Length: 436
Image (cartoon, rainbow, N blue to C red; front, side, top):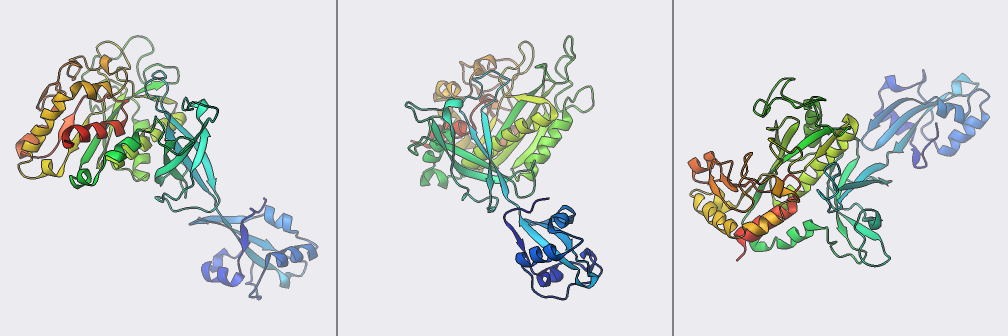
């Protein structure tokens, strides 16, 4: 076993203070109070029975503590009285998964998503949650993001980090904005447009968002997950929030994703099976506008990444299976401090009135292929007509019944498709309801 370049030899005195007596590989403690890497080498060279290479190959007692990999190595000589024990401490380099979007969600076919990633090795680990991770670059000509000219490089600027629940340890997920070679926001960078909208006046209104992400599972062969090889499952009805092998398809995968989101520290608030078999939903929020978008994107990444291990393809296509089956949406809950205060229903109704006036602009940006979903059937409103109502799942914008009873709370925009950019939804809701 080769010793890493950043291994350091610590004194036996420090080790003796940190290690339990049972961890000593030799029968007696060392008498010397000082040691160096040179001393190890010299000792091994003098030994007629144990070489340093042999000692390194016989490492035992590995344990991980914080950012250290500890290996206890016994280096002996022909003279038993000179037998010594050493601890080599190797600082573990950090694996950082850089994640970005190519801006083509829903445009490459329902089997392809927009997530792109690559891994950077950070030799000196940084705290998870920090934004001090270095900028990086990628080949935009291979992701459809090259701008005009011969320079195909695009810049990755870290904007959100969280623990990597798949790799574990000190590994980290690094969500990035995409910048042009000149350092300007890339045309696919919708996050920056939202950030620019958040003026001091908007921030003072304390906007909250909840994002209900529906998705549909397919097998590696492109067949809907859990569906019979020939024909169709039973008609819709028993599957929504269903329990049991005959009604809940793919729960092990869903639970693994749920667990990963929790371990990543995301504000995931729930999961449930949806109306169409093999279709599920997770919810992110309540959270602020940028926080909501960042966490939705990380949750989407985890969905696709875990799919590699489970043999599951997840799609956000608005109508993944034609016919008498529900589509997939991303219902978005939205509120301001005024809406959540006593008597906030007045603020909710004013916001709905303003949303009605901008209906065409919203549905045009609420996800490609959404016209196949917003058909006035399968719990949707018509693409062409704006409709609102209390507890009406066939409305464009719904007021949940508990909100109506409490006379305060939030509204639910049911128009966004599952493949919508969450940053776009947040920006449009803020601009339409809060800006002059």
